[in-house]
Length: 174
Image: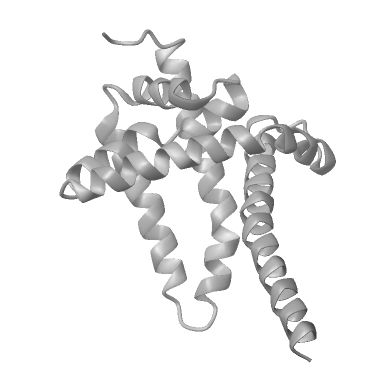
């Protein structure tokens, strides 16, 4: 009896651990695929997922870096967190489109935003307010938020493309 119960407990723990590992990986893969399809509109669904699979580790790394940097910024009294959010917002697009990884993608994002921080901040706030309003609608708000999410990703990609066109290849400030 106790041996069977122990095996069952171990099996449940293993399933939970597998789920805790699989869910973030699958979510990152799906997000990477969507960003790949956004930056290259010629990609079909299958090709986007194939390309996204190659970017799972770079996306996990960039999101890990962003989590620590932005959370640290918010711990330093909100303003630095907002600043870091604006500066590094385009890193995911840079990873997918320019094949730049890690801190280099973050620094490139910062250079694209340099001189346009308020404009980028305003666009981020607008998209967040629109998503918040849609999400606050009783009963259907969560569904509207889910439906709105791809449009916000596309819109912010267009902002990134515009900045990239304006700025060209960034020269890193010293």
